[in-house]
Length: 165
Length: 321
Image 1 (cartoon, each protein chain N blue to C red):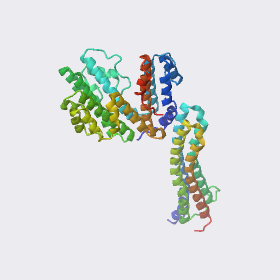
Image 2 (cartoon, rainbow over the protein chains, first blue to last red):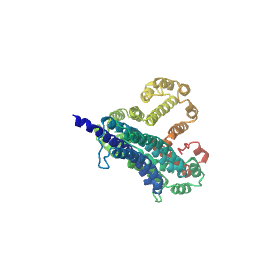
Image 3 (cartoon, chains in turn purple, blue):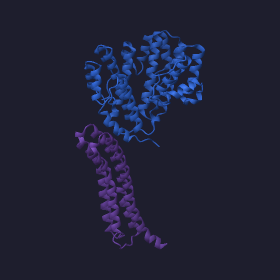
């Protein structure tokens, strides 16, 4: 019983790393897929817009990278990457899990909503290619919230590694 | 699972840039003759690079429209409300041709839910079960009525009313606002036209009531009563409905009212130009293309028959772009 309790801290930390990567990754996959469908529609009519629509498709991909980054930091802090696994208390493991939540949820939802903005932006660029800059700023605004969540997750993960609980 | 129209809408965004604008229509109108109009249209990508005749050009464009829609939309049944009237038209042609021993060559519309030939064969064999469910009851009733009474007008109102009821039902069952609006306007406009024509021809109340179909924006009982009393009473009734802005057009002529309906629909559809998701932009694009084809048909007819531009101008619809 005590062995299970001793290891459950590590399990929760690992769950946090997985959760950050998994949720933000799913959001990005959905987002990139949705924007990709719209981009494919445009390219079947106007192939020379490839460069422009590709940027819109890639915008929702960043959340997946943020999730990966947070997951990587958690794994690194608990020693899973270096080979020397630390003993993680249940509370510390829970804290790592909590730290993963901002990027997991904000990453998931912001990627999906950013893709909707990207699809609309693709529509704008098709009709008015000279408005590319403005059309790009609108979905990029959604990115702000993924970055804020990433920041909190990184600060939390780094903070947790320094405390003895 | 809800259909995803992202791909179709993205393609439509590009195709919207190729739609004829009011300025393009002005150029066509200003063209000297049919050949000049055809040349301008070919420059805009109309036709199939062959030296086709004006009527063929319009058929090709209609065919291209539906080929494009079939290519981009997985399940076309969501757009059935646009095709239902064509099926009822084909049924009407089949019933009349069969009872008069005529061939329906060239009279049926190819863009329909059911293959026109199937409809014709089902009527020939009186095997109504072979027809789609929405046509079965009215096909039997229309055929029986025509054989027993030889009253072509009665046959027409049976089929027309069934068509209106089917479109209305489609709209009621749809969760899309644009489709609901289109279906409602389709039925209401048909009811108004029936009421005005019945008022002008002093039809009996039973006939009027039988011809009118239920819709949400008109009280059919009051409209039927008004139609019995005359056109002015119909207009007075309409002044208390949301169709009050159509009164001027109705007073002018039926074609002016038809133009009012098309313009109203175009204006309602315009916000779909900025809508990135859903079936709305697809519906709006189809209606815009059909309006465009209608406008070009008018211009070509005018050029062929040397009609004055002013006559055509007052009938031309507002363009979507």
